[in-house]
Image (cartoon, rainbow, N blue to C red; front, top):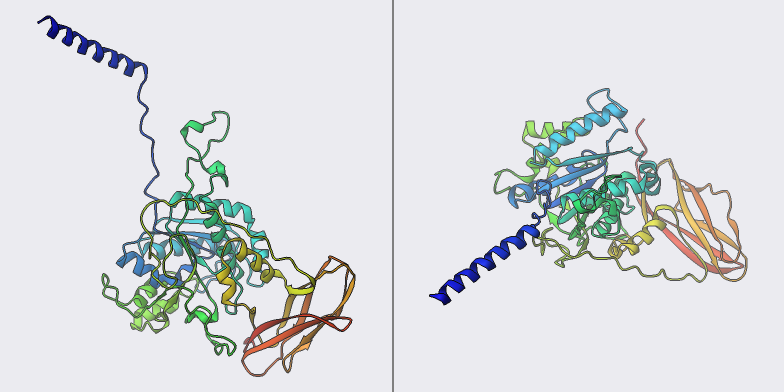
Length: 472
């Protein structure tokens, strides 16, 4: 009995001690996790309200039949240009287009939509002008924040490349920002003020935002080039005789004439229903298609371009091939030094020069292979300005002669043909050409050749798609 009483007393003492220790060391509450109301499978990063209509057949497939969630970010308000149905312009038009976008996306069940209110740039600018106009760094920070908030597996944006087609510089700039944000949102030292937890609170200042780094798994692009098989071209040019369709094999292709298993109509009809909300733009075409039951304008298949995948998979496989739930580790982009130049050389400047460096910096070298020879499109009777940079990486000063080899009917309006380059100097030049006022629609090649004291110093080729003159 004495032993039993001792053991009972010992258990009581241990229990009392444990209670005392717990009282002295209170247990912390569980951490509050991510707000799953904003978690999404696909995040669209687009320039304008109605850019989503470019691949709305795929969005309908992903949402209705693959049960994927989608959220959208529009960088501009779409406040430039005109409305097809009203007198609204500027800020009023921007407000109208925001309403249209919310209604159009809500028709697909997309309710998480953000507008960053960057100014809508004119189509005459280049991608670098647009990025400056948008205040590049500020908008990039906002896009990174929304990736960390929505934690997407896949990002879908516009192709960051110059091509012949609409190729609006706002579209290109959206693709540039989407690519940069894809590579930065998982980095804990980039926009670190967006991160942190409650323990980091500073009563005397602005608290961290409490987000966590997030690395998306894949990024895809859509192109509005002539090769996209889009129905938007009123007078589409003939296919290029110099190459095949550059989008073939670059990513998955989705048919819009297939029936949606869940909706029992074609994806073309679902795309028309979505587009019908954008009446300030081309929504009337969709309304007419719905009224007549004729969806021919929405039947062209939709091509996507794989930018990069951090989970492997087939280039032309489904967007969610190899994508599994959960987070993946941050993938820091490895940067390689540029190949040094030697002697005299020349390259295209402006957007082409930028993209050459951009694709390498973001491991998107396959985009450089899509169009290894640059292309542009313009109407007959228009002036063409082509930026070129001459490089002298020799130890001697050189006088470089530039000669343009033009198709019949073209005129060279460039003021100078000989350019003095000091040793180690790069000389930017704007080549000015005038297209013929009339002639055959289609593709032509222009070549620039350089020489110094009779020594050939390289050449450049540009492919130009001439289209019919603008209607008065």
